[in-house]
Image (cartoon, rainbow, N blue to C red; front, side, top):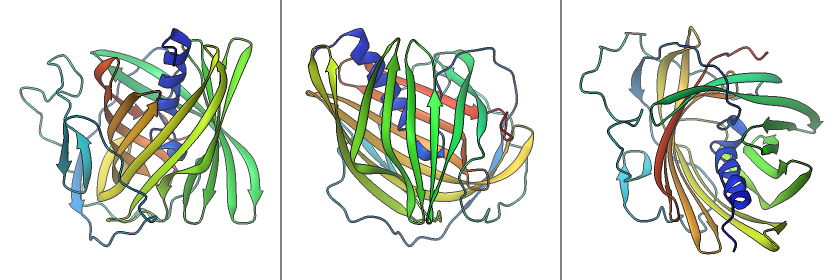
Length: 297
């Protein structure tokens, strides 16, 4: 498989797109940042896992380590990483014990802004959500992200048992490449509750990249570990904490992600996330994001 800049941009957008998929993944539009604070208190939840039948847990690549309630990559963080622990930490604000936030709903249509931090740099990014109607008990939406010369659009399906990514279209300049997932990618098992877990495997083929077809393999695991209370965008929210691993495989190259994600089911969005990535060709990196506006623009 050719390793050119186009393939790398598609891979980055694809990786970003699949971070918690239907619950609003990492956006790709750079802009001016603005500040806010986040703090939380936690309460462990009961166990009792549910999920899809296992087809074989994905390998997380070299250097994996087990964690309570999930798995993560053992990726060392550089001293300058925004995810590296500071020498001292201010006491967390006492927000009180979290309460069950209720069932998850699809996000409202509109534009969401995220604060994105990587390697000591901070930008503001955008994600746009559009409604595409309902078919029985299925709600369909489209999520679009733009930036870096590449747009990524995902077709999402909210079903009673989970949120699925059905198709991804990458657009670069006047060209587009379509990635029709087979089977549909389960990104989040529903309803959310402590101990709920899931696994997913899928693949797609995109033609005409570098002169040869590009086959993308995908596998993931996810688990809801606990209920948490945070302050985001000036509001106090009760959220579920998800621990996830993902592996992308294409032509012998692999990219492994390990993420901790805070999801507000009441708003249908990710409000905060940290991710560590190991690329077999490009090395390790890490980044974090935080929602700026709970009410879409």
